Length: 324
Image (cartoon, rainbow, N blue to C red; front, top):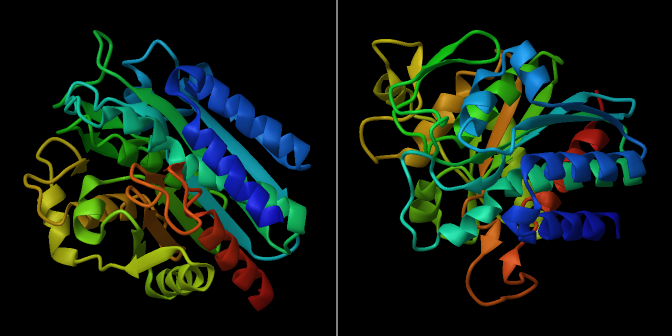
C-alpha cells in the first residue's frame, strides 16, 4: 500500500499542468509530502542557490520568470547511507535551442525523475526502512527569453567544475550535475539518479524500457529490481572512448558531443564526471517509460506512469536487507 501511494503521488505530480506546477510549487508540494511523512526537509530558493554556487541550476532556470529551487529531504534511518537524485525540469521548451512544437506538451513530464524520488522517500519513511536516505532534487523551468542562458556560455558548476554549453536543450544534465556533487558531499555508499534525460533513450530502448548505467554492481541490482517489480530496465555500458567527444577548449567539459551518436551513453558519461570516486552509482534514463503518450496498457495508464518508483523501492529494500 505504501508503494502504491508513492506511485500515485508521482503520477499526480507528473500529470499536473505546468502552469500549475512551477519550481516553487513543486518544491512546496515536495516539502508538504515530506513533512507529512515525518522527514527532514531543506528548501533552497534562488538566493540560496546563488550563495551556494549552484551554477547549473541557476543557468537553466534563468530564462523563466519562475525561479529555480533545490529541495533536500532526509530519512534518518539506521543503516547505510543512500543518495537519491531526481531531475525536476517542470517544463522543458529546450530553451534557446528550442524544441519542435509537435509533442512539446509532453514536456510537462520532464520532472518525472524528481516526482519519483520525492514519492520514493515518502514510502521509505512509511516502511521505516533501516537506511539513511537523502534525496537531492533540483527544480527549474527551461524557457527562452532575454535572460536565458545561451549556447557558448561557460558555467561554473557547484563544486567548481566548468561546463561549456553547446545546447541549452541538454539542460537536465546541468541541474543533475550540481545535485550529484551536493549529494556526494554526504558521503553515500550508493547513489541513484532518475531522469527523463535523453530522446536517445527512446531511440535505443523504446517507450517501455529504461536504460540503466553506472557502476557494475549497483547497475545490476537496479536492473534485477526492475525485473522483479515489472518495470522494464536494461543495462547499458559507459564506453570510455566517448569521454573525448565531450572535450572542450574553453572549459573542463562540454554538455553535449558534436553528433547524435550514443546520446544516452554520452549523457551518462557527462554525469559520471560529477560523481565522487568510490561511490556506487546508477543512472536511470526514464525518458520513455515515465510518461505514456499512447493508450493504457497493463497497469500503465495514459500520462504519468510512476516509473521508476517501484524499482527504486525494490532496490532500497534489497540494500536495507543486505545491511552495512
